[in-house]
Image: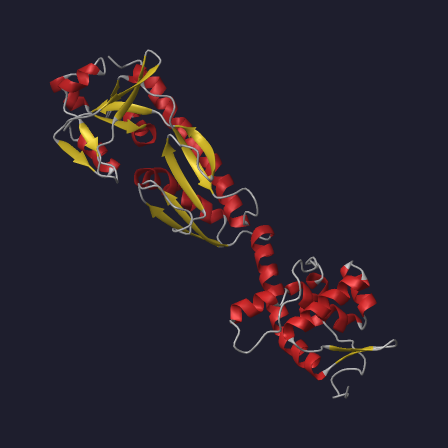
Length: 363
C-alpha cells in the first residue's frame, strides 16, 4: 500500500481525536447471525446500516489503531480470533477487503483507507452522543423537563414551587402542562406527571406524595341560610355544585360510612369543568361541594369556608408523582423528583392538619 504522507506504511493511526479509550468501553459483541450478503447500492440505507454491525466497525478501528489483530484484541479485552471474525464478517457485509494481512504486518487496502476515513466522523458522533447522554444522567442537572399535572393541583401546588426549584437549578427549563385527563408519557413526551385520586396498576412508577383528603364545604353565608348536612343522605336537600370530568361525566362524591365506601351523585343546578371554578362558586355562596384539601386549607383557617361531614371523609385517595422508570434517570429528572417530593409533602401535610383541626366543628 502506498504511503500518502498521512500515515505509516503499516496499519497504525492516531485516534486521540476520538478519545479511543471511550470507544473501547463499548462491549464488542460478536454477531450471532451468519454472514449476510454484501451490501448493494440499491439496498435500503437503514437496513444496510443495521447489517454492518457496530462491533465489526469497532473491531476494524481497533486494528487500525493498534496495528495488529492481536493488539486490538488486547485493547478490547477479547481474543484475536474474535477480532478476526468480526472484521471478516464486516468485509463480507461490505463486499470489500479491508486489510492486507501477512505473517509480519497488517496494512489497509485502498478500500480500507476509504472506509476508515468515512467511518471516523461517524464514530466520533457516536462517542459524542454517548458522552452527551452520560452527562445528562450523571453530570450537573440541566436540560428541559416536561411535566404534567391536573389543572387545579398544578395551579395551586406545582406552579408555585417551580420558582424555588428553578432558583436552585437555573439550568433546568420546565414545561408545565395542565390537563385533567390522564397523561400519556409516550405520546405527550413527558418526564414526570402528577396524578391524584385512586391509582390502578399502571406501567409507570407511582410515588405517593401524601394522602388526599376530601371535604364537603360551604361558605358561612350559605350555612346561615341553608344549614349544613349532618349525613350523606341530607345532601339531597342541598344545592350541590358539581365538577364535570374530561369524560363529560359528573364526578361522584366519595365517602366512607361505617367503614364502607359510599358514593353520592350530586344533582345541582351548576357544574364546571374546572375545580377552581367549583371552589369559586362555593365561596360565592352558590352551594356546597366536595373539594380537595390543598384547595381549601387556607380558606378553612381564615373562616371563608366551613367543613361538614368530615367524619365520613374517604381515606383511600392520594397525590402521586409518576415517572416511566427508575432506571437511567437523567439528573434533571432525579433532582425534580427529590425537590418536589420534599416540598409538596410539606404543603400537603399543612392542608391535612387544617382539615383535622377544624373537623370537630362539623355539625
